[in-house]
Image (cartoon, rainbow, N blue to C red; front, side, top):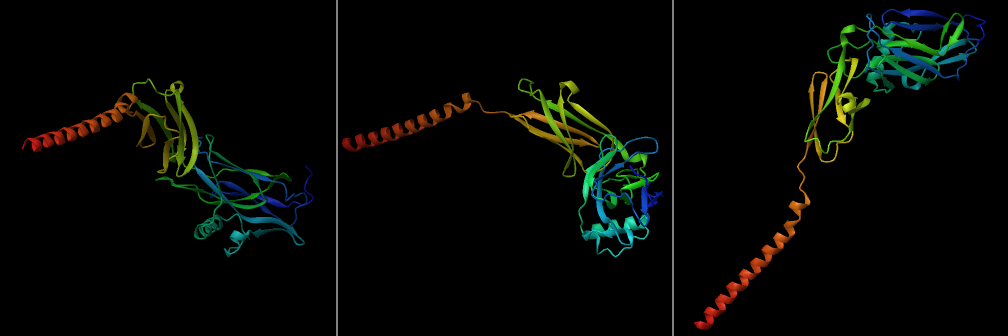
Length: 298
């Protein structure tokens, strides 16, 4: 890639959020506004734990534009009425105020869960300024603070269209999530495997296949502790009913075999009903015949 003819922006460390935010200068020589950008939001604690299962939402708050006066940011339509200045985009307060505006206006961004490596990977993003934050129920544990990140970024006079943001994460908000399958049956009609969805709120975080190979259980280490985790069996096997139990972050899925009426029980019912009707008719006929004989003798 060509070196920039003019140094167009410098790198500013956002100590409050732990993310790097480049501030653009007046001109951008080799900037391609049509080239897609990508962003990784990585949640790693100081002791190396990777927080999986956190829901990260990003909002594009401004477009990157080059005009006669050089490079500038212009608010997107969704944020055009916020009334906040972009003169200091590295400000933690600006990020907080923009997120408060997004909540007030009920704006919707793009959200992803962090994977087992603590990474939420956003791709095919337009050049501009983005607001990133954590959403969803975080229980008694503090979520990361909102922060701003610019795409693309510059380092050593080169433009990078991928950025990795690493906001500060506390180590006491991670835990292990476990799910296990329990069978209440004789084992004769039990399927070889079942699928269970792991959900945060209404969104599916992962789907796991449980079988004898994994001892009908699965575990996710270092997921974000929250109150809105749940599990759901994808397709309950025929002839079974399912119940769910939760103990902290341990979920138990129990399948109980249901008592199904077989053909041996159902089959005689119509015949018994028909036979009963015939007996009733015969009884009526006998009673009528007896009354008639009695009348004739009298």
